[in-house]
Length: 358
Image 1 (cartoon, one colour):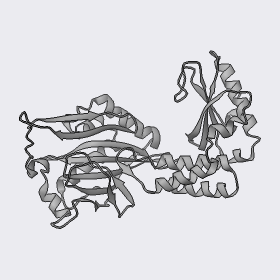
Image 2 (tube, one colour):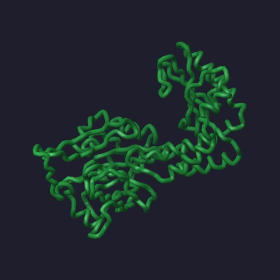
Image 3 (cartoon, one colour):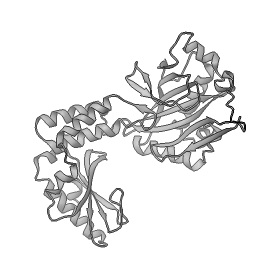
Image 4 (cartoon, helix red, strand yellow):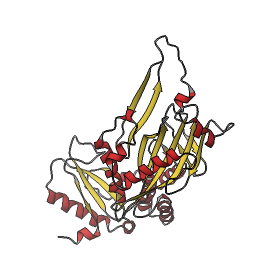
């Protein structure tokens, strides 16, 4: 039997997925691997999922912030090393926890730690939020329900038994959560997948943003309500590994605000003399903000960009709904540049405080 490993790389918030795939022999005859080879920690799996358990199941095995998992001391040791590495921003220790087949480079690990700090801020402290035992006996990646927490996980391919660990990272600014899918070897556990998720924005989780959005919608402050629903949706982004059923409810509520129109459509009417090419919600340290991209025919100076964005902010500030918006970021896109990302000229963020600056 031919065995091989395949890697899929995705940039922040997810940067690695481990897939182990069994191939077909030269005679086109599939020879199944032994269970102890596919699931080297059957002793632990059977403690969590005894005979008669569903072949696809997710069960909480620890809620201890210290990372203690009574069913497996080896898993406890791994989780404690993981939280230590994140808290200390120890890229060398974190690198050692990834599966060797991923061939993770030090730069990617440093980038992962930087992404956590960028969201959470200084003085981070990582603790374990949840540890899940994942029974994926058929080895497929379809989502498995974790009913105790109202979410679903996507296991990695071909591993009958895995552990999902959710790490909560509290920083000076926000809470970040790191979800790792761990695969066992006979000797230890190793990271097979990694996802960084911003859990709070301006100190509020998705449920608070959603509640505030619902109140704004009742007051017919549609643009601000849409922004708040969009912030809630972004906070619920579990990448390719976590699914939150409430995501569909938030998306449905957001869709009702403008109907078939978009935020760009709604703002275009307020910038009739401008070429508005993109609009979205934006995380700002002070709350929900708006990202606006303007199409321009050629290069502008830094002074022209600053003056233009300040003027647009002043014009929008006349709208009553702007009281719930922290500010706007103006990006400028020249011909042949994608409207989906920042152009070569960059942009500027303007809020009420910056207007007072010279």
